Image 1: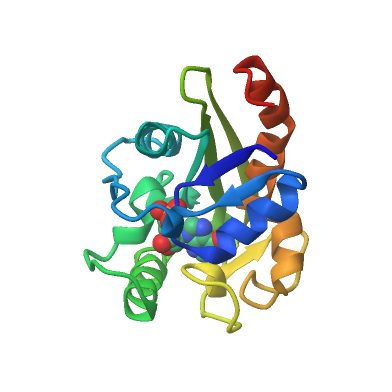
Image 2 (image 1 turned 45 degrees about the vertical axis):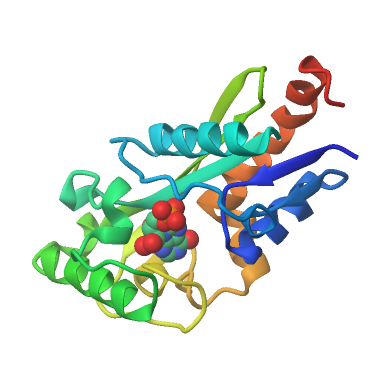
Amino acid sequence: MSRIVLATHNQGKVAELHRILGDLDVVGLDDFPGAPDVPETELTFEGNALLKARAIAAFTGLPAVADDSGLCVDALNGMPGVLSARWSGRFGAGGDRDAANLRLVLDQIADVADGRRGASFVCAAALVVPGGAEHCVEGRMHGTVIREPRGTGGFGYDPVFLPEGGTRTTAELTPAEKDAISHRGRAFRALAEIVPDALKAAGLA
Ligand code: IMP
């Protein structure tokens, strides 16, 4: 069975990609001690996803998938975008940082009228095959930023994001409901269409 490595320590993401890729053996970075922690220095989601996938393909010698994602708010000219995780200037993982990021965005657009609070979650997913080609696809989920957080599921900006046509925030959806419409689910499913041919072309499947 072909092996593919996803550039993350998040087992939830590994499980999600495994469900989508079906008969491929998907592993995460926990299986590769010493794998580089690649700084996201590019200005686009695509640039960062490719940067990470290239580094992990080079380190492991395996086909590598990496994703980069964030929230793009219309009233902020597409920001926080690639800076979503660091928007409030706090570093390190966890609820505090997520809550500070979310609160800052709410405060920044406090005066923006209800009809102008459009936003999109965006995810770029890259595949790099050692000695083979590079691919990158994008998934988006459109919606609006509400005024106060609702729901306890998800992470990051989920409690203030209302998907288009829905009545619950992405923090009020089940994981399966979110996967079905999310930027990451869409990007991973688009990448799944490319993976078999990309591996075949490199003689790996
Ligand atoms: P990264 O792709 O791990 O760099 O995540 C970037 C940041 O974007 C996260 O820390 C969140 O703040 C935000 N983000 C990305 N995807 C989601 C999502 O599905 N829900 C909520 N926030 C998200």
